[in-house]
Image (cartoon, rainbow, N blue to C red; front, top):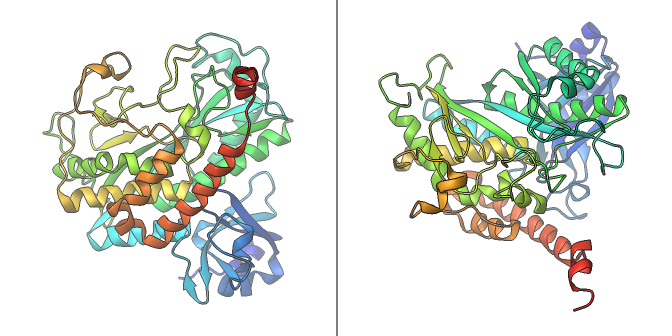
Length: 435
């Protein structure tokens, strides 16, 4: 039975709807629509000018519409008269292929034709900082190894518990909250689900955390590396593929040493094969590359990968296999676009299965201390420009994500890089003013 948003508005006493979309840079865009107009908006969508967002469009392009997905409806727990909706972009009656949610849905449809259904969970790390973003919100959070620090966690109980209570009320199944490895850093985990559901929740989670932090006089940031001496914000993804009905885990093989099936290894092989190209999407900012292969932090480890490898329950590798029937991809950071994150994993994995890619043998070593001893290990791109260039040339990702999305993303990211390159940093002044 189709979901009628006008009826839902009356039943749930929703006065306004946020009809949203996420652009190529991961920015959440919305229009606030009164409930009286939601019936027509559900059919036609809310109108936007594509050039006003990070999409490869001009002011001459016609109106772009975000058609809300009723299944994505989230009633704001802290403001229940407002309902949030994820939308799919349409222009001239056709899907905008170079848009993140549309791209993910296309990958999901490809997987479904093959009898596959990807399920994922994400671990979104963030910092609670001052309003100007220059310092931590908690001046007493100073331990050298602050991970799991109960006192620092409880000093932010009001914020953390409110966010967790919201997730409980929404039925997400949150199951743990912790202080992470950096001072001022936190992580909150909820149940895994279908890739699209996880992506929608990921988008909303980032908005919710920022909104609730602001309510408490703080600022939340998912910036990959906000402080040079502290561990950066990762966004690890736990991945498994199930049958079309979502009942059988096709990655599970209890007889295998790592608990993975042939399909799982091939899917993993695709992720490893395409990892350098995917870095442009999984680590999409200039700042991202200050997290990857960073210098040792105050806590003693960066917890981020520096090469394209996998191992068992070993956090020094890009891919960790913590349990049977799934793997954890540790490459992504807090700036990753939630929809492109999922679309990239699925596109690479499907390529791996189709091409029967072999991931090779797992490495049972500490990559941080022994990685230099391993031969023929591919390194991750060292900066955004290198990553963009690899992404642009990837035949696999062009076939998977489409030329329109790849070309648009590359064009905008080249502009981003040129803007960064034109900026003069304090480091440059400190080191070259008197040269």
